[in-house]
Amino acid sequence: MTLQLETAPLVEKTPLERYVAPAKPSLIGLSRAELSQALGMLGVPEPQCKMRVQQLCHWIYFRGLTDFESMTSVSKELRAALADHFTLERPEVVAEQVSVDGTRKWLLRLPGETQGTDIGERPHEVECVYIPDTERGTLCVSSQVGCTLTCTFCHTGTQRLVRNLTAGEIVGQVMAARDRLGDWPGGVRPSDGVVPMAERCITNIVMMGMGEPLYNFEAVRDALLIVADGDGIAISKRRITLSTSGVVPMIERAGTEIGCMLAVSLHAVRDDLRNELVPLNRKYPIAVLLEACRNYPGVSNAKRITFEYVMLKDVNDSIDDAKALVRLLKGIPAKINLIPFNPWPGSRYECSDWERIENFSQVVFDAGYASPVRTPRGRDILAACGQLKSASEKLSARERMALRAMAMTD
Ligand code: SAH
Ligand code: SF4
Image 1 (cartoon, helix red, strand yellow):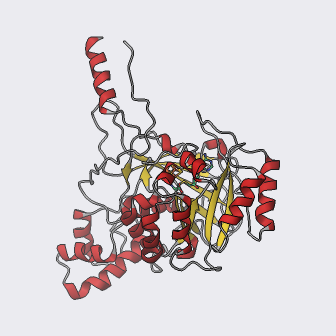
Image 2 (tube, rainbow, N blue to C red):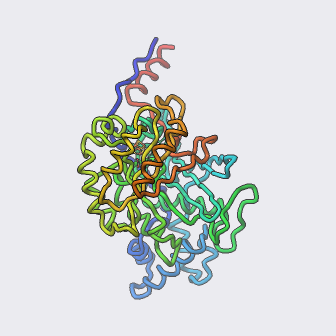
Image 3 (cartoon, rainbow, N blue to C red):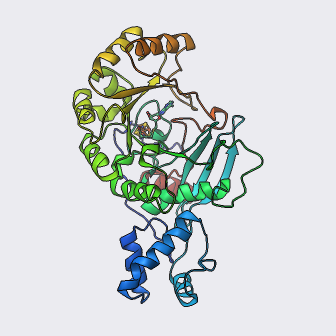
């Protein structure tokens, strides 16, 4: 019996609106107002809530505690009540790969999901990547399990299961990474890896992992505001970059409600090509996207927008493309980030030759733009840009039925 699976390429996949909260929820990811509400539920009198929330934030996000017991400034009774109703659980590291260049990729299992008994169902997992440099350490964080979009050069785009992450699961990636790196006050750093010569291992956050962050706006916003809170993890908004494939209607809100740095995945200078590479361009073409960038709240020469441009051999890497790119970005405070294409199993593109990349970069540089070429990091462990794809695939209902039918007739 041969299985007829759906093979037609999807332009946009529907996100699965199923999130199974853990029986005992984690406090990670709650805003100060939500923490205050939780304390109110436990009987903490209203006038005390603000101070108690401050204490909790300190223990959870500044010190990185994983249990309530060690919160010495909190009364014994409240610690017990908190432990009865909540946890400080973060995503669990189920696999770690360390690249020869020190890049680390973690496969994180999200708390609360059951293993699933249905054929083909697995726990939900995301990937998170740590890229250490001499003076900085960047954590590449995911916003969704998979991605509803289908950019043709991106491995994540081929993943079928899509679920939005909660704010807790997004902040939880930062917490899990800091646990693993001993990146809390008094923590012990790993002896087997490269860490920056900075006070902290994680100095920068990029929302460039799996998923389209502006398709999960509220959760991403709430998570990033927690990450930037000066009393806790305290990573400045200038060191947090959100990358979007161009969800135009949400760009302004990202500026006003988050206030982080913006990166835009441009990748092509003509609509016909961008329609193919980034199918979302059919909804929001280049001119509309660039208009939203011009109006990005807070944009200035000191706060430039990064335009990402993946270098695809003989597709978008000509000198004419480079010239058109600088013409297109005229008047927008911009940085251009050239990304050598990172191949993945089954990908249909090749990376441009180095000479091409250098020539392209020269045109951009001569036009007055800093044009760093993003050194591929962690390619040996499929941790570089666009190579992420967790095993959280889910078979379609039709495939499951076909498999069941097959099992029954065998
Ligand atoms: N969804 C968001 C953020 C995640 S992707 C976005 O698309 O912007 C992060 C960056 O990696 C994007 O610029 C994306 O276009 C790029 N990318 C995806 N696949 C890639 C690949 N195979 N090689 C190089 N860069 C890739
Ligand atoms: Fe999604 Fe970004 Fe990959 Fe496109 S490049 S499929 S938007 S993760």
